Length: 324
Image 1 (tube, rainbow, N blue to C red):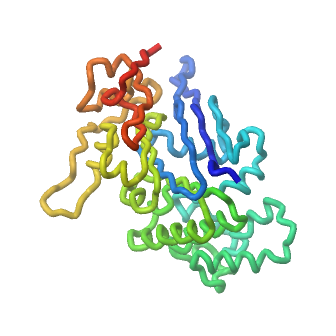
Image 2 (image 1 turned 90 degrees about the horizontal axis):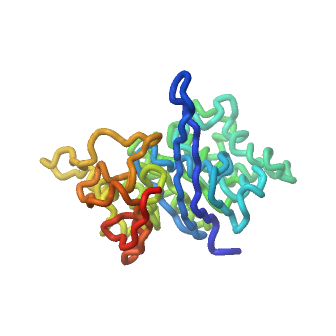
């Protein structure tokens, strides 16, 4: 077994967006040249504002969206050579909203057992026993086997979703905002459960989240995305202690603190997110950057290794790549 589970090299995904009646469609580069290596057993956090490409990247890893360009490999195999069932056996998602990701007309037992049926498990006689075992593992009593989602709390529904993802022993679980739809009192329980399952089952997580406290708590490495690109990547402790990119610094500044009298923090990013159909030239972050240099609007930065961090910023970039 290789140490690298998923490898992405210069991955892009472009959507053609309607510009209105009688106008030609325009390209929207949702993911624009992302390279990542995900090692076995780690938790990589993907953070960034809405629309930066996190979920699109996850959908490409799951084989739900084809990449427009670049290379995605799972266990060393190109994702385009794998069929849906092969990918599903290796990767499983946990979605944001447990209220909409579970079929209300199916019982808990049938929901969790569905991957066994879809992936043609050869031993149907063992399904109920396996479902009850995974229910116990995620903290669901077996008496809920015949219950329906509307009879469960939000935390219990998310445990059902986690059990469904794990029933066929995947290697990687992609968690898309797994706690954002839950009460604060339940969020920590689900996060602790995910950590326990990772240790017990040897799982690898890709964690997509807006909540930086969640990312700091559970991730081992963090990749910060902005307008379809990874602009900073580092071990979690390093990134939170010493953020390099001005955008990462702004994100960390935006975190609310319990200290009285501080009020709502000002990130100095402004209220408007750039138009992804018509992104700024050069460094796409320069219109919002308080540290922008004279050549930032004209020259695209390249990824640079600074200490223990990879960062795409002219503040640390000695080599310049001009806009074509």
